Length: 271
Ligand code: DGL
View (cartoon, rainbow, N blue to C red):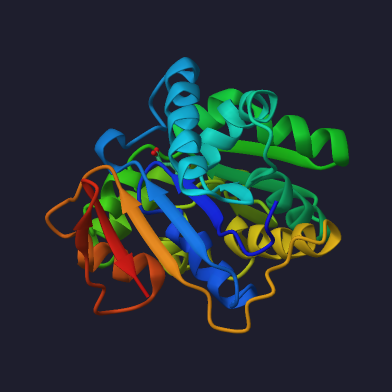
């Protein structure tokens, strides 16, 4: 496999761009191809069969472009489909859950809370994995089904967002955790607002940075790091274009002035 192939990344929508943002920082010379399945978002309220099928299709799309590693930048797809993808494809995958749990456990907390989509929380994967690592840690996981539609609609600030966040986090506030893990790649967008609701006593951790660092270590250990001296190229493909796509993509990537153009029926941003 050529070390200069791009890294493929997929998510149900634009949330996985929070992982891309960290990858751009941690692996600046790697080319990246992102696929956001906006047409079929959200994954978080779908059955595991459906999420698996969508994840296989997303993987086929990325492998058709030629990639050396696939990052499943979606907690829902990682919970329900990562093992299945690993059994089907002869390509390495990195999910978002293990790196996030490693990072949370390193904080030596007594109580960890996890928030995510219905499907991620129902899968029970976080409590199961945390308990296997550190049986003494108390874990509470809570689904926040309103966060993804709210964020994809661009409602991330102001009174309405604050009220929704407070309402969805009621169970977490009662649990009074030391650490809150953002178990959905959309949530870093509202991290500041979540922190405001929970107060200083709770350390809020997002998996995006942890995943980028784990991708870097993986490439180095396997001798797959790119030999590119130039800045890596980013291409973003999506299965549909919401009316506010450019603004949203810019918000997730932390870059204003995103421009899109059509290619093969997909929208492409090249930077
Ligand atoms: N960003 C995805 C995740 O991390 C979820 C969004 C969705 O429900 O599609 O779970």
